[in-house]
Image 1: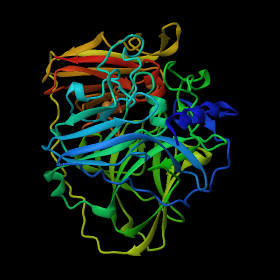
Image 2: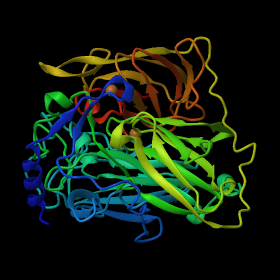
Image 3: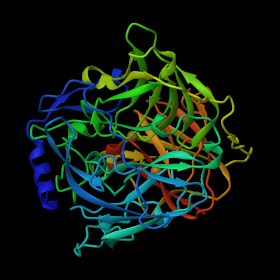
Image 4: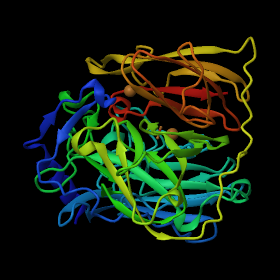
Length: 507
Ligand code: C2O
Ligand code: CU
Ligand code: CU
């Protein structure tokens, strides 16, 4: 399919979009769009696992962003914007202490920006929202959006990732100013796993028993396209979504690694599940249900920034957009033949289904979850630490309705914080509705939720924290190594695109 044809398909997408309100019970801020075509029954499509990217030279990767048509619903063609033409993109696997260069080539009909979420990355490689890569051969307008200039190039950009960080589940995704929501929605997201010797030395499940799971929700138009209510279907000039969806775009199909409610055959053994919520606005509460028996508990071993100090057992786990949870589930406690259905307790109807595992064979298992996983040094807050408050709320953006931080829309050239490298500061996040708050460059540690301590899913190093309606969350931040400009933003992608982002200078 040609590059222009893709935009033609988006142009037709608006017709007939039906809406279903999403009450507070869903736990998500947003409006659900009903698919305009029949949906398949759940748990029929096999779980895909994204291929691991192969280096083109030692420590060098090339990813080509292109339009493709994929069979997501059985028998239906869906146009996507894909890293290497697939969705999710190829998984990039790197090792701590070993720098790599990922060259991104843009063969799409729209400009792009690539950000490595959770990466400890120099500013010029981080995916500043105005550092556009124009499509190959596009010599048109290099002035950037709204006259705000970034480092605009045509065709390709090399991103250098130092690898100077703990083993962790990272992900890469589009981060273009004003258009991150539709770009990610149409497919621009992939895993990036950092591994290290410390983690490799643990007896955790690996190989086929280690699964990255990218969760996201989508709706489909009558002709099979992803239904995203962009105001500007060319994804080039006018930012934002139709008024009904400004709180967030929610789909009625749950995709795991790009497949609708897939099913996966497993050994009766422990599995490591690296769960990423790559949805634009949907939150999940995942429960491993077993027909006729008690739910299967899950053991959390890591979060956004890698391993926890010690494992934590949960009956259910919650993830907001942008968050990752590293889990171990033990199918070995179940008889062969058992089905384990992962359900979303915050969903209703089709969005309460997620994924099914079928325990199909007995198998030897010499893995374990050790009682000590890693060392997580607590950030120590000095008595005279700098304290900053960031209030995430609805607000006017250039005369329109939008989303603001401290009453201000994103101003690339006006930092809301100048933070010295190496200093621990306390940042307070305050909300009106749900806002998953994400900070670039370095992970943080959650100190308090309201008057209490960290919540059950706040442990370890975090780079995204789910701040619930009218909540106050304090985190300890500390930036290291890289001086420059970064962003802090809401990871509800519609909020982000409608200006809920702030510039942070590390100095
Ligand atoms: Cu996952 Cu600033 O992004
Ligand atoms: Cu990020
Ligand atoms: Cu938000």
